[in-house]
Length: 62
Image (cartoon, rainbow, N blue to C red; front, side):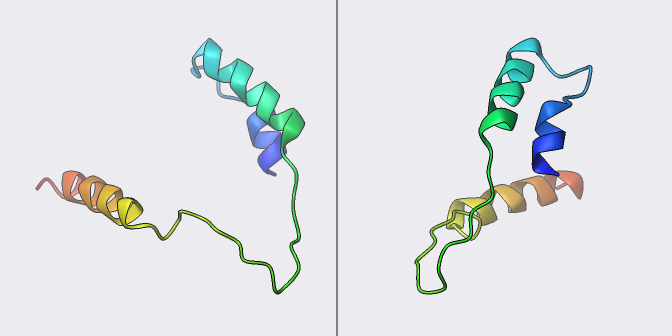
């Protein structure tokens, strides 16, 4: 689960991020908005596509 992943950072994770992860793990919660509720996310924002393209191009050696 997300909570478990945040609660168990990898040993190579920098200490400040381990602290952040512990805090996030204690506060993360699932939500179930009503069907007619607008839910805004950035996972389809243009910047996501740009970043994905940069990563893909780099991985392809271009």
